[in-house]
Length: 299
Image (cartoon, rainbow, N blue to C red):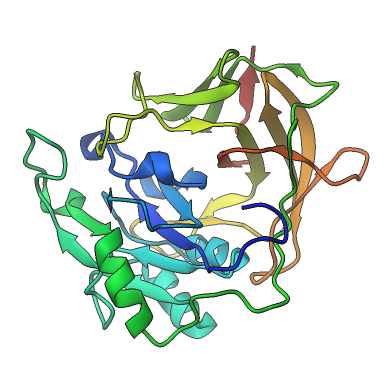
C-alpha cells in the first residue's frame, strides 16, 4: 500500500479473535491488521487486503461493529462480515459503505460455511463462515459498486526503506493491553526485522499454510472506548475520529506519536511528536486500538 499507488479498493474483512476460532485462515496475506475491543473485554480483528487474488480462504468471518464500518470508510474500502451490530448495520446503510453481509440481504454469494476449515476439527457454525478468492473474483464484478478508487485518491500512509525510529527506545518485546483480560505480545526477530504475534500463550498462525503472520510495523493508538448507553449486549463505542496519542514500533525500537482523523470519511494521519509525517517501514502493519486507560509495555 505505497503512497499514491493504490488503484483497487481494498477488502476489509471482520475476523474472529477468540481462542476457539483459532487458527484463522488467510491472515498471513493481509497487508494491514487491526485489533480492537468488542463486548466482554475480548477483541476482534479487521484484516485489510489490497490484493485478494492470491488469498485461498479467509475465516472465521464474524460480525461488524460501527467502528469497523468507519475504518472501512477511511480506506474507501469494501467491508465483508457475517452480520453486524444494530449500530453497524444502520451506519453501513446510511453511509453507503459497500458491505457484503453473510447473514442478511443480497450479496451473500461470496460466503459459505466450512465447519472443517481447520484440518482435523469440526467447528461451531459461528466460526465456520469463510470466503475465497474464487468466489470474490466471480461475484464482486456483478455487484453495483465501484471496485477502484476515484482518480484523485491517494493514501496518507508513508512507507520508506528504513522506517526504524532513529531515536527510539528498545522494543524487542511489546505487550499491548486491551482490557484486564486481553493482551497481545509482539516479539522481534532481529535477523528478519519483523515482529511475530503471540496471544493466548501461542503464536498467531495461518490455518491455510501454517505460516506465522509477520509484521514490519506496529501502531498502537489510544482512544476513548466506552459502553454504548442502553446496549444490553455490552457493545462498545470505539472512537476513530478526532485525535490522540500512541506509539510506533519498528526495527526493535519505539517512539511516541500522535494520530488524527478529521471525520468518518477521512484517512488516519500519523505524526511524529515534532509534527512531521511518520514514515513506516515497507512491509505489513499491525494496528492496535486501545482505550486511553490501557497502555503497552516495551522491553
